[in-house]
Image 1: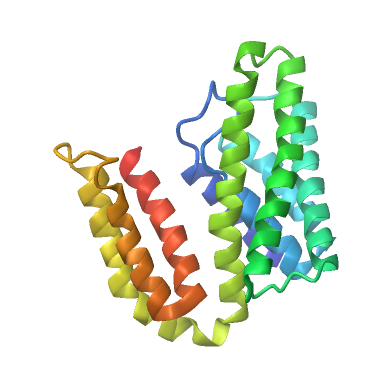
Image 2: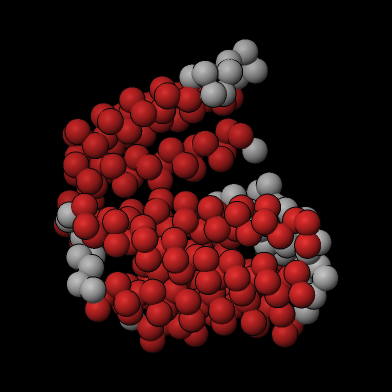
Amino acid sequence: LIGAAYICLHLVMDQVSWINNLDNLLITPWNPQAGLALSLFLLLGSRYFPAVAAACLLSDLLVRGGEFDFVTSVNFAMGFSVVYALLARLLMRNRLDLGLKGMQDFLLLALGGAVASLLVVAIHIGALTLQGRLPVEKFLLAATRYWVGDIIGILTVAPLILVLWQQQAELRGLARDSLAPLAAILGVSWLVFGLDITDDFKFFYLLFLPLIWMSVRSGRKGAVIGIAATQAALLGFTT
């Protein structure tokens, strides 16, 4: 049941984030699936490797319409799953606190995610370039976008899942306390990105206000919720 739930959530996240795609080559500016897969491996172990690999394959078939041949899709799915399964194991060996209670834990997660996503980039972008699907002159652009997309996906999704998993008993109260700040995030996002008369960059700093509000009110739990909500609202209003 957990594996099936993961696959469904992976597909939903892939569909939602399938925006601003570079040449229809699975290269998007936000890849929340990376954070979702890493969280699953951290919380429940590498025995869910088949679920992650299957989700990647199904995403290629259902979300992207089988853009690549089967062998290429399998290679991508296996590379993605292996890298993040290994990262989870390394993080646990380095005693990562799954509740992310200290700055050291956040830094360890961020650094590990940055290195692991580089390996995923090398597998994905390297294969596309060798196959001639991606022009050599676009290699750096594609690699950078893919890498940043994975890092953002890890840092917005993984902390949210990990912190809330450790605080399941407090979810009802946390949800109640987050209603007003989340409404503020939506309102500010609409004001900054949803109106033609506003300058996106001139008023971008306003998004920090509800984030600060949530962080002060609920600590790291509010911070991770606020960051994920801001990312989702930003993409929703800019696409």
